[in-house]
Image (tube, rainbow, N blue to C red; front, top):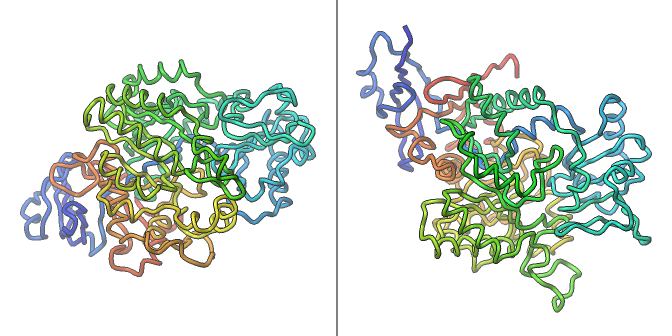
Length: 557
């Protein structure tokens, strides 16, 4: 007989809501939490058909909500593309060696694609380096941010790019002194080549989905937002659910007037994007919510394509325009927000520079003024730099500040060299002012932006939220310790706050009566240990709707 009741006893169960609530036990029935309380209170519900789990003092928290992960594309790229080291070692020979090894070991590929090179290599990027490795096949290598590309001469030829090709709006074909393309494509220029890359086959794409869901569960993640999902990605999620393989909840942000594709071949035309959003309900289900859109407002600061209120290092203040790097027209964006908000679509806006953040907040304000408060919590994603005047506006506008990529709120070579060179040390030290925005009462959430970062594992990034130290490598220092937050705040970012972002605050994100039993069992009490040991946290079991979807196997680790 199927046991529809599960009782968990002898635990240290952090409910998260209420904030300080810790209980010993809980009862799960039909996938939902029916009772929480002491061991004695819960034991009276035990019957012969009840499964009883002795937690033996272990820590239980709600399942984690990951609000920015390119799950399907990242998984596909991991197994089918050249993975470049995401560091700033500035060792071009090592980088080229990795590319060459991948090229030589994959003779059947019609294109050599990859991602991960850092801004440190920017001055050294040239098509000739790639031509020496392989001049017969096109090569297309995205940088760590997925916003810029390094290509060889064959790729340029296929795309018909030469010295006479004009820069696309919002992008640049970098050229040498004679006007010839160097092989570096910035922002919207990327699509000129990207559209010629063959699409993945459906079987490989689906297998990537299976793998990434298992990985997410192994780290305790039970809900995600995919920040740029087209119809093919949505179809993978739908097939996974049909095959009972989708043991996560998915909020899918569909592209809106986006010139950046999801990284795999030609992106959708604007008309295709509009139609996808119009017909989005075909993908809606118990586990998939496609009522979200994604808009890019600027680029990234390391490549001087982010939109800042003040000029970059070396630029003239007199001639500087804060709108220079905006990828949108601010007035058009306001109308887009008003429209999407009125249609029940929550918008996530990519904004890394403070001018872009302000532009996004202005658009949300326009929607609030025109439509009133719709109940939709629109988001600024990345939120790397925010002016002092705009920090309170997140709370005032009921807007979410989503912080990603994971761990970028700590010192690194990219932070101390790439970013400092671009905007100066004083401004660079204001990177990710999470505590300042959280302290206003605004809703703040966590995102990894994988595969921009090398791992899906959220625990090192959670530690860095608390310490503001680098948890990925032995790199000294602390990045603005005043912006560190308490571990309970960090877990709220990754649980109940994420649930609010997913419009699931009444169903998941905390261990409360009536909510789904989405929770994880940990090998340590992250609220009591030395914060510098959070990174090593092991998830022993992940539970979704009361059923175990992952169990730690020490032998296979």
